[in-house]
Amino acid sequence: MVSMRAHFSFKAGLGFALAAQFFFGSIGAAHNVSLRFQVPSFIQFESASSNLTLPFADFSPGAESETAAMEYRIKANNVTRQRGVLMVQIDSKDSDLDLQARFANFSNAGGTAILVRNRQAFVTLTERDVFLADKTPVSGSGRTIQGSFEIAYKARAVKELPAGTRIKTIKLTFADV
Amino acid sequence: MKKKIPVLLTLGLLMCASPSLWGEVDTKFIHVSFEVRPVFLVKSSSSSSGTAAVDFGWVVPSDDSSPGEILEVTIATNTARSYRIYQTAASIQSDEGSTPPEGLVKFKAMPGLAGGRSEVSSYEDLRPGKRLIFSSRPGGGADQFQIHYQLGESGILDAGDYYGRVAIDGELS
Image (cartoon, rainbow over all chains, first blue to last red):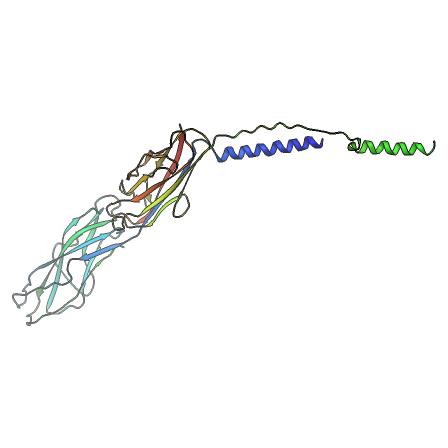
């Protein structure tokens, strides 16, 4: 009776070992691997130059300076904002002179949205943000903008202008939310 | 006579209680048979993290210089049959449902340390579906090889967390 019990327990142990091997190893086994990468939200906004000169030929009220265009490059991948994606303001406004700007010529370089002019005419810059361009989706998610555009600048005399040079700072802002 | 009877009875009881006292040998035979099943295991893990994940981390495709990841694939087998290793890829998608352009992720398989042959020796696009990537040497046997993954050139990508999945599986010939 003692030897019978020993025999039984041995068989049970052997059976477990084979079952474990059967589950851990099999023919045609597959192994799943996850694949992941994260793309951060970013804005790259660059201009070809940081200086601009607007010469006046006349000093009388209503006189306009020459128009100068400046080129910008934009790359952004999480633009959810629609209106006023591009805004502009001036550091201080003179009472005898208006500085004006107009968005022009967006060239799409593979983005899923483009920038379009917010208004046709030149807008007068103030010390508060003025909308220059909006976003229009063209494909896919419509959240990426990649391309270049120009902004034309000119000044207009409101009163007679004394001779001299004035220096102003224009702040151009691209906002994605 | 009165004294002999209890002595004989005591001796008889002791013999019944302990059979070894009789001086016999009791032998038992157990028949054991072993069966080793054919085993064919494919395991894979990242060479950088050691887990079953290919994680490129934070990247800006086109700006970053081709970030790459290596997956180590190990085949354990006790059969003498040749085999093939396949990669089955599912489409990649971001947490917001954006899909990267085809060809963003590229891969290639390296030759096996034990003589297995790569079936994708130069980089090619990771496309959804099943692709033969590796063949064992004739006669099979355990082997080990690497799969190199790389993010290729692409246009601008939506911000987000992108996930995909590949299954590495083998088939005995």
